[in-house]
Image 1: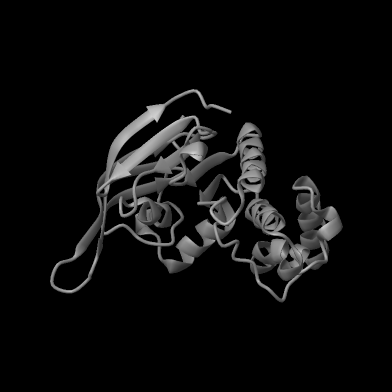
Image 2 (image 1 turned 60 degrees about the horizontal axis):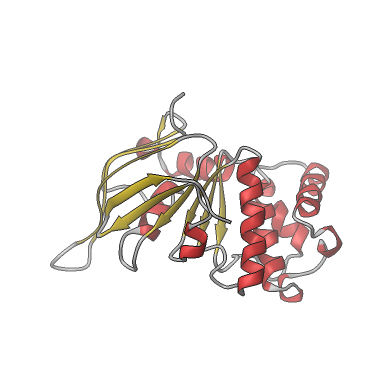
Length: 231
């Protein structure tokens, strides 16, 4: 079976004046369907840049990126937006919820962009809020929710389009330890249900929970180890 993600010789350069910054320097990486991968490394190692490339938020400078066998680096902006919206679910450290919308309206947003009828949007969003244990908070706005509840809403939103891959960027960075553990339990349950999950983190506690650790340093893969997760 072909990998869901395949990077070959991927570089990413940023123009910072006289000397461009090479954030990624020849990344080769394959991720199979159903894997639970942690991308780790020190500050400045290229973790965030790699996540941006994987999530089609940034194009590689050179190299190829295939998602489900499709050449991502050859897509136009409309094609990238469609891929992001339909096949990738994002979970961010800062939650990225719209403050004026209720929890259920935030979860509905990706379906609104796809022009799914309102009744279908609402039904799917409520199902997912129930899945993450927030059906009773569906009408609350983000300011009325705790940090853990906001992250659960973000996870529900990430799942609303039934994505092939869930990308989580420091998903517990704004949470206390107990709440962060609960969020990681939820993310792990998604993987157990068959979702491919990639978590970018600097936290070794989260790194101990994944089944594959990809460590970056200076824009290259320093190590790539499949292992038994600790709990």
